[in-house]
Length: 296
Length: 170
Image (cartoon, rainbow over all chains, first blue to last red; front, top):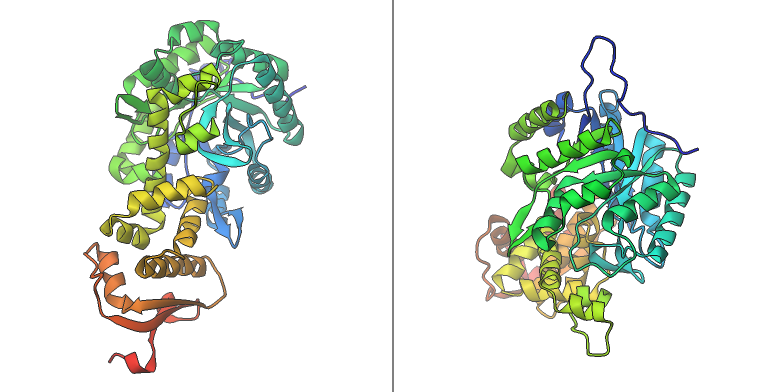
């Protein structure tokens, strides 16, 4: 039996139940930003690789940032979202990522963790970008087995996220939604749906979002991401540099409605490099708006 | 796919139809450009002095492209910077080599490296570093001098410029 993420399906007596809680990404070393964000969120999402630093030749979690997380853990729940596991690499995933994750879980309580349905390395070589998995039966077998191993290794729920398709899709046996459904059904993992990624694919490749949502088993979705990037050379880029667009929030709300209570958190992602341009106050205000948007 | 992404090598008629489709797609060109821009973005923030110098010498794009093509480094900011600086520490242009070595040594010492690093310079480093730190043009034709920068945790400001006896400045 896989560890479950409690869903908010039972309204508390005499009180409106929030449809989905709000979370925000944080990469550390900005206590002023953190102080402003915490009142608006229930979850803090961290990425092991981006809260690390080189110690000699070894990548280790930053002691300074880990102290921040321990302090914040009294006010919010911590969730982890990795980017370098490369679960789809044919030669195997990244041991460095797992070492960082091990260390993180040793130091703070984490409610669930997630990674991307993709790969960033080929034959040990970094691509410098993440590519989507081919949606073949063979790929499903490989990823399913690795998800099971992750679940055996860590006694907390594991979610898989849909990623942007940066190159044309390899011909496969499944649609995007069917592949996610099959993976979730085989492994009982949860899904993390990135609403802005869907919009990027729609803009860049004519991806049919309504058809995708119709086919997706939304009851498997436990977390949503909202974010915003830039348009360059006619392409929408998933670079997490702006406040979410209204269309992204609308799309996320649609998914929350379809999921009928299974979504536990909607997380706003942004890069720390975007903070000076966005402004800390604006980010906090946006979190307030998002919190209201996802309350019933 | 690795070759397409990293080097943009266009396939031949015998290649798999899917790989041919990818190689001819605008998506691949955009993806490779994004990889390049991300590297630029990270290096600009983690290798400030060296990045500025390369820009002034119009060698930035060439250096980053070479770095991407020939170094298997994680794109994260924590690992890219040191690898980029290390690669430039042997650059054919002595000024680039010195600035990169200095910046690398400084970052290591700031992270706790207990060793004393010695960075040789063929020109007076002070006006060079001052210009780079302030975004001003570097005088690449500055008079030659034999000196070095010592970088160590036990030094005030973590580094000290040392001239050979004949080059001592007041």
